[in-house]
Length: 258
Picture 1 (cartoon, rainbow, N blue to C red):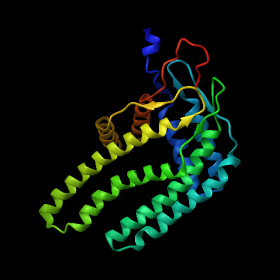
Picture 2 (cartoon, rainbow, N blue to C red):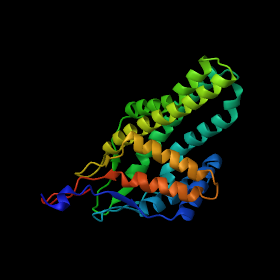
Picture 3 (cartoon, helix red, strand yellow):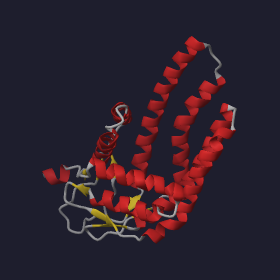
Picture 4 (cartoon, rainbow, N blue to C red):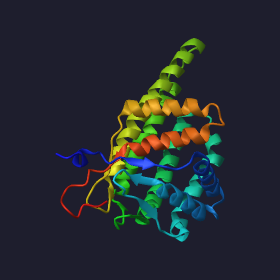
């Protein structure tokens, strides 16, 4: 078997820290205002896709117009403001966690619509038009898994009244549990997510393991503590995530393209 067939054909992300950070911040803040959000998110997508490539030379670009993003972004903006304005209304930790889940499901619904539209605007260098094939029900199920990774430790903390000393130990234990659950949830989610990307004869895969994800999360968190290093921390984490996405190597038979 040739080296080409054995190659995992990993994705590479070649963006620069400051431009990526500025475009991400501007796109994120614009969603609070909504009006500039479609254009700013389009600019971010074009920048990110323009700096992604697989080791065999396959690239992709985002060709959709900002107008296609307007409708789902209305819902995303609404959910963001709901979180900002309503999250402090609940004195009970249990009610606060329940509100987090409800809001997360609403955000997941609009995010799903947005993801579907974004993928429909991606074209690879081989001429393939991509598609996110997952159903809304499956997408929401995975969002519930991710929400659960954060809610379960919070729920345990809320129902276990303890003193100051034991409370400190419990806080440390719940922090470690949260990291472990997030590492497992995100790793499995990304494996599922990449398997739902269609449009060519090859199916992407996510190769990382939960422990790797947790260690990278911890590393990025420590890197962000210095504040000024946040753009490089974000880029470092994104480069690693990208490197874990692979395509099956090109077979000797003609016609294989992503």
